[in-house]
Length: 141
Image (tube, rainbow, N blue to C red; front, side, top):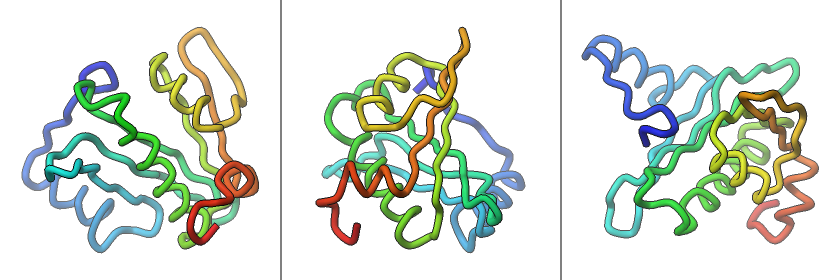
């Protein structure tokens, strides 16, 4: 995933604190999940960060390793994470700033709204209301 930041190496101490914050038990502001294919091979990650309880917004993240792209993993992971975020977690708006073209194309195709653009990036948002309209046949929506 070098084109979208690559792997990040942590020291053992930093990994432990990251894991406790993002995965278990979690801090109530950040959620992180690995994405696996049917062969139990990790193909990417999906997460949200910096949840603000007042505005009910968070920052979105999804990365699929290049060799596994265009197979539906990203779309399914996005759908499942947003479904969790909007229906179970209680979020109302998901934001994402995307710098690479493939990521920008993916979020546009999924239905994220373009909020603003610069030469370097595009800022996107998905509201609970728009997600429900776009994916009304999704279970529990």
